[in-house]
Every structure is written in structure tokens, then in C-alpha cells.
Length: 307
Image (cartoon, rainbow, N blue to C red; front, side, top):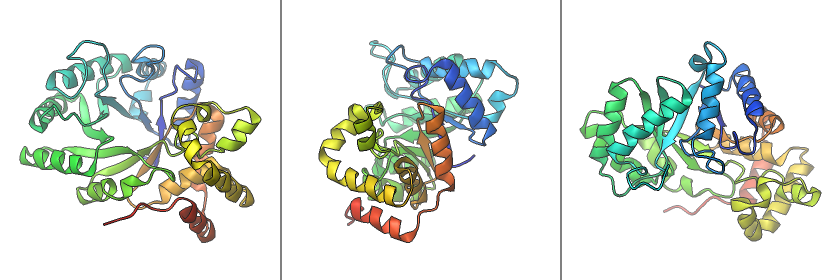
């Protein structure tokens, strides 16, 4: 498994089915074999849409499923029904069955808890996951958006049950948002848990946001998390884009490469909207950041305080 993961958040929403197919074909061809989705992705049209597109792609050619390490998630509500969300044993098992049907596969390689459920006891969560692993429907269990103490609590309970527990944590981490360094990443390393990061560009903010806004080509940057953060970080982002420009480097590729270079980070989950975005992700894997540039990045985006 490589260090770049193809995130499918845009599939069926901002990326057409045909383009999604092309992106998955190219990903496998280029050695990117970890695909990340979630049961509710595609909610802007209907929940489950992204999983359905991946399932259709699997069905178009023999052997495609075997080439992919498939990750999906459970937690978010799929309907308004009270039992159709969270991490109850009922919902975990039902959600897995539904994801398997949409994905047209017999197993999920990495079944991730999309958020901690404070109402669900860990013994209940692990009982459900143990059933799915014993049935061969899930290979590994992962988490996403957990805190360090959640990992510790989960792993201590799993260990008491003689269960592997969490294999990987997927957290937000980038130049703008570095709080995971204080607690989460050290906890993951202490427990032998791999760390994948989502939103390495902070919703597009670190991908040349100001230039794209000036050109009128911004899509994700012009909305949501990136636009909200831009109000606070505009001067820093302007200087960041200038530093990248002076180095002759693309801001998005610099941001992704920086994230990959940090201690304890095993991979990044990118959510490309176009093949051009995906190609940029691949170039980031080969990029070398010199010491002067790294020092500039640390000055612009300092690490969180420790202790």
C-alpha cells in the first residue's frame, strides 16, 4: 500500500461517474491502491452514491477488486430513523451489510468509525466489529476524527478482549491545522496505530486559493472550511503563495509533500475533483522540500505548543 490514498468524496457530486472511473483506472495503473470512501458520501444527491460508483467500477472488470485496498466508514446518519446512525452494534453490522451491497464486494479491507460515539460502550463496538471480522466481511478496523484519549480507551478495551482493535486513524492534519501533533499522533504512535490524514489542503485553502479566487477558477476554495479560514489567514496564505511561487513550486504540491514529510504520518487522503488534481497529488510524492523552504513553512505555520 502506497502513501497516497484516493479519496472519493467528490465522486458523483463534483466528479462525474465517467471521470471517477477514469481516475480509479489511472490510480491503480500508477500504484495508488488505497481507495477511501464513506457510507454517506454523495449526500448532496443521495447518501451512498460514492460507494455505488466504486461498486459499478469493480463490476466492469475482473480482478479490479483484488487490486484495491478498500476503506469505507460508519457513523453518520443514513436516514432520520433513530437506529440508523452512530456506533451501536445494530448500526455497525447493518451499515456494513449495506456498504457491501453498494460496493458490490464481499469484504471491506478497512472499516472505519467516522467519529467516536460517546453513547456506545467500547465493549459493544468491539463485539460488533469482532463479528464482522470473524465473518470475513471486514479485514481491519480503523477510526477517524478521534482524540488521543479515544484511541487509548479503545485500544485498552480491545486488548482486554484479545482483539486487534484500531489499525489506523484518519485525522485532519495540514499546515493550517496542526493540533494532532500535540496529542493524537503521539498516542497513535504509542499504540502502533497508523495515521492517515484528510484535507491536506484544508479544503483548497493551501492549493493556491488567492490566485484561484482572483482568476475566478476557485470551486471548493470559494466555500465551506476554506473560505471561513481564509478570513483569518489571508495574509499568511498570501505570503505562503508568494514563497511557493519564488521557489517555482505549486502550493498544493508543497502542502501535500509537507504533510507526508511529518513524523508519524503514514499517508494522505486526497479528494481530487479532476485528473489534473490527481496528477498534482502524484507529483507531490516525488517533490523534495529544501531546508530553507521548510524553515519558511515553519515560520508561517508554527507548530502548536506542547506541554
